Length: 182
Image (cartoon, rainbow, N blue to C red; front, side, top):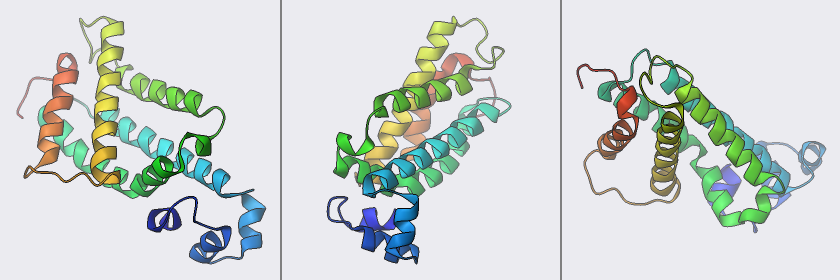
């Protein structure tokens, strides 16, 4: 990630990657055929981080605004760690993610939506199709904002952008929010 974060994907060499990893180029080639395969492995890591982020939200005993806001702090810290991969993906373009990338993207979103809608008690009285749509919109809202802000370097002009993001997510998840403080 450090190599792709400090320069462009195209300009990075396997020698640069080996040096950053503290190994020889031969060692890198023993695990990866080239930069594209390394980038694909990093994409897998991004999906794993996202899976953990949404599992943490699903694991909250009750969704309240205060709970969502607190969860966002952890989610943002984790997303910040994978921001270099998101930047590298944007710079490398669609060809770098390879065949099946669209299917992997969709499968990841399906996993995240399933995590957020798996507890039917949370979504009482909400048709399953609406719960799924709301969960998907929340996932896309979060990832879009964090990608533009953390990976894209969009300057924030508010004191607490996570407060505004919590409001947006709570609006989407409103039928599943528990009454309570915050």
